[in-house]
Image (cartoon, rainbow, N blue to C red; front, side):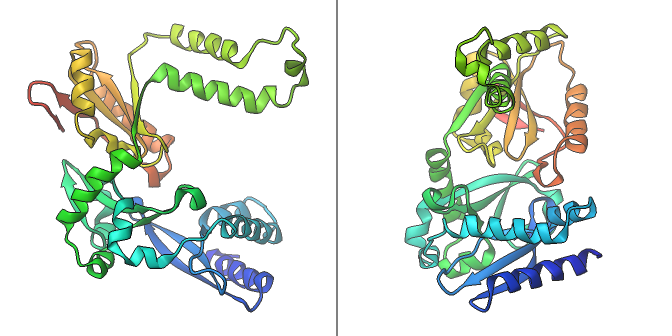
Length: 324
């Protein structure tokens, strides 16, 4: 099957599974960096909101040999899992006084989002754009969000200045920043991976034998990593959800206070839309090398939808601002 045939097959398959009480539809959704994804939604008589399931990754699974019936099963299970959690009243979204407390902002790349920026309110920041979204009820929906479009502003009868005002106040409150040494971040990742891949599968650790703890193993691995080359001080700035955390660089005084604490200017590496990496500026650090590193990671490691920028930013203590 080609892509269009696959989408129709999935839609018809879900219609057969769910029956007449549900309306199944597919449509294209414009995401970050002007990437279009195929979305499947299910309208249920018992719910006024539906989870969005993106089909692009499932088509890749199909091309790799996954049985199409198995894909329908996976999508159905995913729908059931998320639809049970949803109990969001869409009328709240229509009431600006109620939803305004959940409005936050994030950073995206301006040039890479020309189509999307025609549809949504935004403010330019260097070569990036500040855009706005709503955090839905996180107890029920986890990290579910809704991007704010121009039509929402018309419905709420507000302007962009009002959006910026509430988002600037809400975002640090709802999504407080986390600033950690890169070694600590790597250590946490190593411990988590060890616990999931080794210790959960090996009963010997629970029997108090000589098997070292995940902390000890992680510390040893980290020591080996650091001894393999010249260690450069790096720090990771994100938010508590580790989602759309690059915006933390705009939180009041976060960058400035950290630069003053280190008594150095700062290189800011746009690791992704979800976090930035901060490197204290020293004479032995080549900015071009950092630029090349960012470009290489964006090209080889990141999903295109998560890319923020291809170059490094610089915080000057003298000027007290971030610049290109």
